[in-house]
Image (cartoon, rainbow, N blue to C red; front, side, top):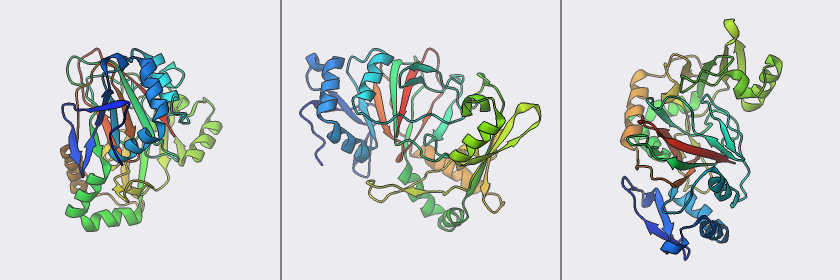
Length: 321
């Protein structure tokens, strides 16, 4: 498939990498300076929708840069140009609704990092696409690093072939503890009432079960979420048969409010988890946000996170099936 398109110019950005012949992120810029307005961008996206979707699957990340995208309304128009179904966010991070399909990124303190993850990796029906819009770039830090998921699997298989297949065969059990109400001082501060959209425990249990988890009620109104056994890797259609590292082992193993262990109740070796964490960092790709950037991610193929930053930083998000 040709990357070139008559309505976009392929550009470059700091931190770009070529992974297995694919540029990540692929940068698309206005073909001409007078075509940088949002109206021209929307027209180009609508006329090249199928091409754009193919490029996103091929390159896993596409960065629109140099366009005059000003606010949440412009960002929403870009998302709606594709006609993708919206996905409802289910996760531990607090997000605030901004406009139509647009939400704030996780509201936790900017001084803290957000670990690499596939969006909603543990629930049934993870969204295929994650879109981010930079309205206010941070003065320092605050990058959204990306990791090609298949590279993690490849390297873990090289170093821990037997352990990877053992974990895959047994499956992984996860738990996550949440308070009843939101705690804005924490990256994982969303309370269960907000997460499940109800203060009613019976209804929360019903909604949790539909997403692939059970709830264990704790003293003081908190709850432990117990996820059904999960695979370690996944292979998704249209992505060259690559085996994606589609799990939350590193992010949840041995934490104060979460756990990850084999489904038979035995521990995942610490050396396995620590080396995986190192590999994920070694494979990371990051660029500096610029005002007006719009980043499209293939959530089936990429892990993403957030580096600590100085304020202000305003990055908005939309997720689609």
